Amino acid sequence: MATYDDQVLEEILNRLDIVEIVSESVNLSRKGNRYWGLCPFHQEKTASFCVTPDKNMFYCFGCHAGGDIFSFVMKRDGLEFREAMEYLAGKAGIELVKSRSGKQTDHRKPVIEVNQAAVEFYQQVLAGKLGQEAREYLRRRGLEAATIKKYQLGYAPDGWTRLEEHLLKKGYSQEYLKLSGLIKRSENRNNFYDLLRRRLVFPIMHYNGDIVGLGGRVLDDSLPKYLNTPETELFSKRKVLYGLFQARDSIRQANKAIIVEGYMDCIKLQQLGINNVVATMGTALTSEQARLLQRYCEKVLLLYDGDEAGQRETIRALEILGNEGLKASVVSLPMGEDPDDYIEKYGKEEFLRYIQNNKLSNIEFKINRYLSREKELNLESQIRTINYLRKDIGQLNSELEKDYYIKILARKLKIEENIVYRELKKRERDISGIKRNKSKIIRDNIKYVNYGINEKILAAMFKKPELFEYIKNRIGLEFLEERDLRALAGIYEKLKDNDSDDHLERLGLLANQQGFGSAFARLALLMEEESLPGEMEIKRFIRQVERKEEEQAWKNQFYRLKDLDSEGNFYSFLKFILNLNSFLNDTQEGGKR
Ligand SMILES: [Zn+2]
Image 1: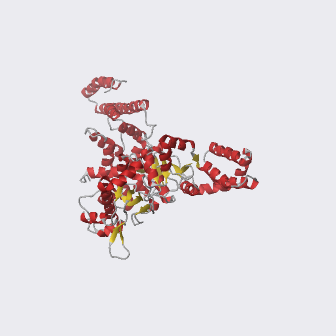
Image 2: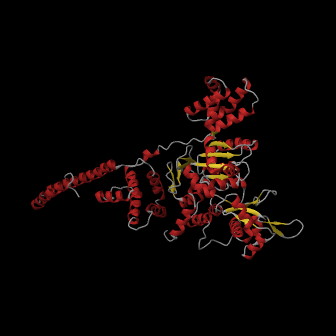
Image 3: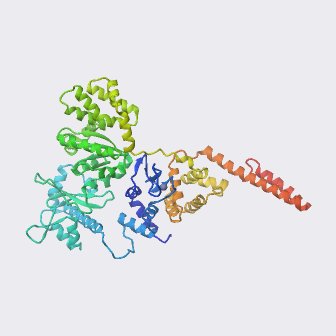
């Protein structure tokens, strides 16, 4: 199995995210830094299938399937290792030396390549003589060079066929240029022209960095202000979030994403150091986009325009986010301003202060929104408002939180808290019935008690190389009676003598190749626990192992004695007695080894 180039394997592992690959077929929910879902490899009703992106591993506590991204794809699609590698290399955009048959039906890759080449062309233009006007524009808008580079902004120059000519000259086929939508057939003549002209160009990337489409913005007030390449097999606006590729690590770290509407809003915020931001590109948030975010975080902040359209869109987005189990909060900007405008007018500090002071929870936003539409506060409107918020408040998990919103609601409706409380209580039973069916139930993982002491000790040893040495020197590795664990320890022992910087990564790779992927994945999860054996427990464990060995040694002496007794040989017996002295010295407390 080790014939495949390890570098290619590692490259694939680096480029791909196991959460993303698993999410293709399993609906995962984030809990802390792990993801849980129903196991695709056995029938179950509660989630015991777990993915840990930090370790790039999956493991099922129900059926013990486990391993890395390769084992997952092999198991899921019934592939050979080589096939899984080809599949994943394709996903990662890595060219393998030997390709399979010549059958090529997938247009995605060549179109992505055309898009990439177009972006490079537009970047060159922006930097060159023809880019003068666009550079001036970007300078006025306050975009820094690093930002322009990070988002790979470019400029589509004036002229009808500049891009087409450039790409054809570079050897790209016209067929894929057409498929990309970057050139368009003219209506009355049988030729093509460039879609984007005299526009600032924003590459639109899939979460993995593939350029799936391009957006263009005019430099002046002409219309349309924005123009995107058309929806294709590759590019569906519903399924992409602008900036996710650049933001995904920050989103995961913060466990939170900020959603804005436009490219410029997204880029500007990022430049301010707010890195966990994505844009919906001017369309309404879709459930596909929400699911995309849900792979990375549990919380979302909507940062939309304060005008009526923006407010309406916020309500819709809150529904969608709620349905995907994301916890949302809202900041509405003053009427008619988007984040980009606001930052330009008032500067960074003021913008950050505004966000801080105007953040509303999902429910607070809904209360305000609802009340703003009621003409007057009377009995009817009070009841209507309570009914409207019943579901949201009923779904809160914590009583403290419920209490908090009941207080707010009472204050806003100018009635007593206990009246709101009673009103909400009235139909709570129906609501909780619905809730049980609708929301995903994820159990806290209580399966850790199932780990054996040897696993716990070995996990602690892998975590600290000094501890591995220490324990090995004290009691050897024979205490690992389980075949898998002994194999893992064996692989690790060989690895740690090489001076590679990440032994665990290599261990995972080799363990998977040698068929111990599941055991390693199980240990990898354990290694993330804080409650691994501490110094005291390890010392106690070592003493136990030693005591067991002593007991065994005594037993051996006893059997030897019985043998000698039946043999009846005096000299052998004498020799035994003489040796017994040194044996006693050895087995006395602290005397051994
Ligand atoms: Zn399973």
